[in-house]
Image 1 (cartoon, rainbow, N blue to C red):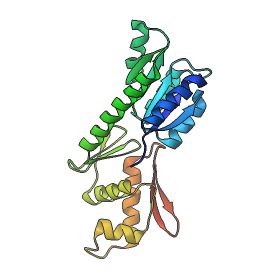
Image 2 (cartoon, rainbow, N blue to C red; image 1 turned 30 degrees about the horizontal axis):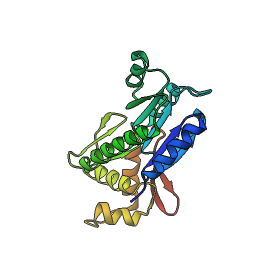
Image 3 (tube, rainbow, N blue to C red; image 1 turned 180 degrees about the vertical axis):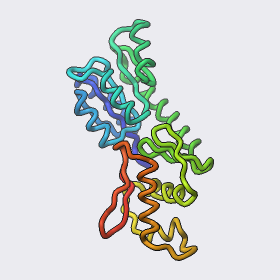
Image 4 (tube, helix red, strand yellow; image 1 turned 45 degrees about the vertical axis):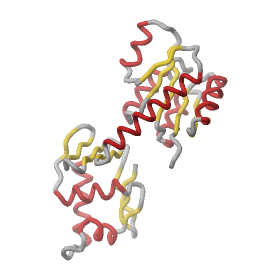
Length: 226
């Protein structure tokens, strides 16, 4: 089983070190950033399961980092706030943070909150076993519904099957022969251009936002890249 990834974003290296110790004890893989730009680069590359974010960061503020994260993901975010006031507590929900912790804090408390959010996240994933998510695409296999950027997309049955197969095998090169076997099942003779046509229709209907793309790998096939 893969270890859950936790991204800590805080310019206080001592806080990061203490948190990293307890989170590693809980079986987490910890990634650390001390400023916003690096944090967003790590977020896009590492795809953490949860983010711990300080509101007060040098340069790019925590608010800006959270706004950038929310454009890409709904991953749980625990925000550190410096003052125990109603106004500061309100900044969390306003910014779409999932939780907040007032500084100074006990790192064991933060670790416990991370565990709670990860448990909830795991439960939601298990409950949503028929739902596939890739970037801004959500595909519900049971309801046969696809949304892209929150907008419902109308697909033919074969387009739906093709998209489902590609998302399940995202970031892998799929040959046309593989696609024929898994999607068309060799029920009838299918020309290569038929697959190409369906791929082009998906590209047009889904209108990639940059978080994913269906790439043509010349001489090999296609890859749904996230």
